Every structure is written in C-alpha cells, then in structure tokens.
Length: 284
Image (cartoon, rainbow, N blue to C red):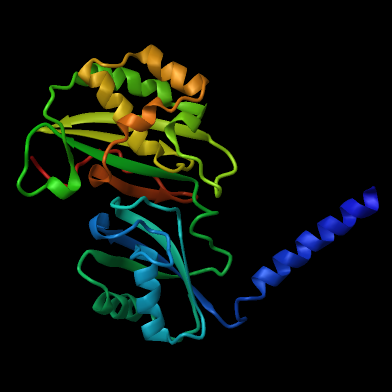
C-alpha cells in the first residue's frame, strides 16, 4: 500500500515539474497594478467566447512581445460587470524592455476603460494570487438616482436603516461557511472564508460597504450586500443571517446585488497595510 502512495506522490511531483517547465528559463516576471471599469467585460478571467480583462491584456501583450511566450495571472477573479481600483497581476514575458516602457506600450493598445497604473520588475517566485494575504472589496449603494454614477452604484429607492445594516454586518466577521452566499464553483475546494472586517459608512447619498477577507468565492460579496440591504429594508433580521451561515440556503441568491456597485479595492501582500480611510469612487 505504501508503494502505491509513493508512486502517486512521485507522479504528482513529476506533474508539477512538467507544469513549471512550460516557462522558458530566460523569462522575466513583472508585477502589474491594474484598474478597470468592468461594465463592458465578462469578468477578469480569460474565456473562449467572451471579452474579458485578462484576455484583452494578454492580447495586447502578445502584440508587443510576440506570440512565443506570454502569461498573465491575476490575484483573483472578478465577476462580469465588476470593477477594480487595484487588481494585481504578474506578467511573464521574454523581454529586455524596462517596466515603464512596458506600461506605456500596454496602455497605448488598451481601451480607456482598462489602465495599467504601474509595472514593476518582480522576483520569479512572486505569484499574484498565491502570495496575496487578503483582499478588500468596496460596494457603493446610492440613495438617489444619478445621471453620472449609474455604472458605479446600486440605486435603491427604499429608505435603508443604516444602523441595522451596520449591526448585522458584524455577524459576517470571522471564519464562516459561505455556501449560502455562493453558486457552486468547481474551481473552489472550500466554501469557508475568513472575513477580517466589514465597515459601513454614510457619505452623502452613498452607503459605502468595505469587506476585507482572506479571499472571496463566486458572488459572495454581492450576496452579503444584498442580504444587508434586506436588513436595511426591514425584510430580514440578524437571526436570518445566522441561519444562512449555519445551514446552506438558496434564499440569499434572490438578493444578489448588481455588479455595477462592486469594486475590487485592494490586494494586500506581506507588509502591506489597508488604507484606513473608506472612500467612494464618486460623490453623490
């Protein structure tokens, strides 16, 4: 029996070596800081028959560096229509170009709703997703109709009880099973997520919600926001949230907040600190 286990372990190691060997030895790795308006895109992750942020940037990179070898990996996925103030990715290419030249060349090819803020040379061992310690998302709810911010808020006509929402949000902090707040995703092995903090703030007509966690699963943030809105409307109470966290329920799916108000705010690595100030992207 031990021989079979040893053979399986050796095979897994061999597969890992094979996977690593697909990179040429002389590639360079760069850390990219990216912002984007996700309205016109089917999320971050590259797809065969859809326009995505990752796919568009890879296309631009291939035009610059040629098709021999280009690899781009993000810190995590964002859903269709979701924006990013600070998406982090690593780009592997064979080049002698300086980071600032790469940034300029990429931005020259990208449309105005995707912008490479910064390019830095990175260690080849740096990984945008695996090395990330935590992520923060920002959600913007508007209490009035807006001519300029429609793409970046969820306009809610009902009067929301902010204090009840703020109190209920505390229930999500800590390690919980968020299976009630996500659709089944074959790429996710676990639905348990550690939420470090949730902050709510009233800013003019806006309610800002910041959620900080180790990672996030598919639609999780939007369903947390949707349930908090139901609490604010008076349709749900804190006991309902505890029930969702303790036993899988399909009910939160009905309250999924639209992607328009959601932003990947920041990705934190060893030594990074989250900005203490919670700010919206617009003023209403």
